[in-house]
Length: 86
Length: 185
Image (cartoon, rainbow over all chains, first blue to last red):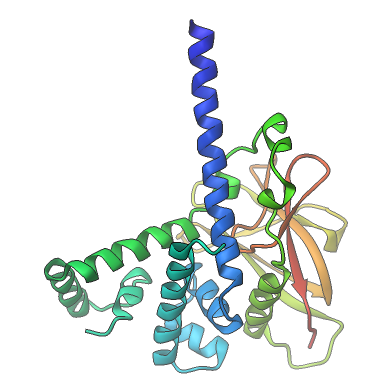
């Protein structure tokens, strides 16, 4: 009985693992559908390393433009994931 | 309130007054609250580093899956994009056949982080802790082309860069990140 329980737990763990990996795969696939510029600014924002001002300096666009582009990229990513087209 | 305040909240770009305004608005506006929670969950996934936080799926399970499910396809362009942008950070003033590339990884609890890759015959190079926020970094001169690399935690735990979508399995059951450097300056 103990072994059966252990095997069941292991099976559940494997299932969760596969789900996590699939979720991550979908995210990566969705990111490929973003435009290059959107992907770039989002990639820089999500690292948490650079402020919007620094991202603006790196990418050559204004800080206010960074705010808009980062947010649009997030919204577009959400839309792609919600549509399930990944 | 501008819609992009959600992202500014996520990225900690709001001042205290703006935070107060944002929280008040979110509490009184259900669609805004739902959207904010959605985007926060999405952000959690983006930053979750799932691939290296969870152990590899056992071989017998992985065999039943199409290979395409476990490996992102067509993602070289993404790595290229990230690499290109980050290269602007370290624009040298003279022409050279290599360009500096800064590798950064977040591992606040680590005592030792190294990097190993095809650019140095897979010799491990220690990374340095930057500040007190848990980041480790190293700047390496990379020639133009495609490079494979991975980080090594505490001298034994190898994992790919979670911020670079393009990865491939190595011959030992692990994964390497694929970084494309398309220009030198």
